[in-house]
Image 1 (cartoon, one colour):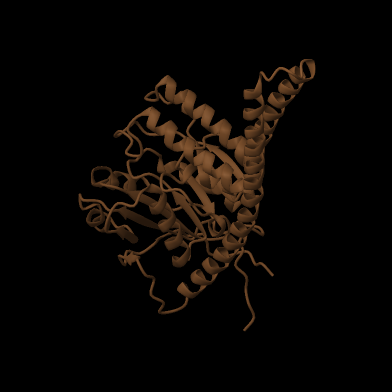
Image 2 (cartoon, rainbow, N blue to C red):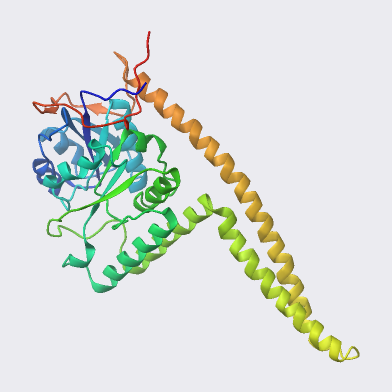
Length: 360
């Protein structure tokens, strides 16, 4: 039987790449207490920084550090942080940026839907149409991208590229990132595919501190995010994706074949329009091949779903083993800084915490 928790541990994770200049201000802006949360801990993921970001994190009182010896990208840093938070015993995780783009004062509102049992994932809606430093092409792309992700995920997410989000323990167990670019779009599509409840919370952002390190230009942003969305379609809807192209090829080939037969019936002795026949047959054959690819993709998707279910169970076991007394958590450096505690740790979670009490 699932029991509501009396003590809820919130972890705020911050992926960093050479963020020494802004990390101190970001940490200072974080809330030290939140109603319904018993303790708050901060985890920094140092993604191969060369400016001694990890050293500064220790100085400003960060509780845990995950450090990569070389840069592995935002997606890898995000997932490494989530895995570390699970093993450290987090009940909720808030992801924020190290450049102080997001305001710490919005974190209580971000976690409220999860504490209230209404959501598994909460996305901070930056209301990108109102952000002054966003150019009009970027605003249009943000709007278009969010519309595509809503369609792909079957959710009502308002700001799909926002990195300011809260995740329940249940959501973290099931989310995996397959691309090496960013976690924002794929995790939303996957969350919708898993049937997780997603809620939007409107937030305000701080003035722009620096240029994005994720992409150098708008065309690069479109190209890389477009590839992420296309790959997500191939992963989660292979029959629909490949089937669409198979139908187009088959229809195109059939139309050319009918054209050839039409003219052949009018004058059987005339051998014209043979090109239509050749191209039409080729298109039909190619359409059948793509249809077979769709069936094969569906079989692979079934196998992937089974593999992800195994990974979910492994994550649960790993988190349980890491929570035992004296367990060593590989790759995580705990600084010994005391958690930020609140006076009231009564949880409002109703039926969404998936950890159970097991009789001895």
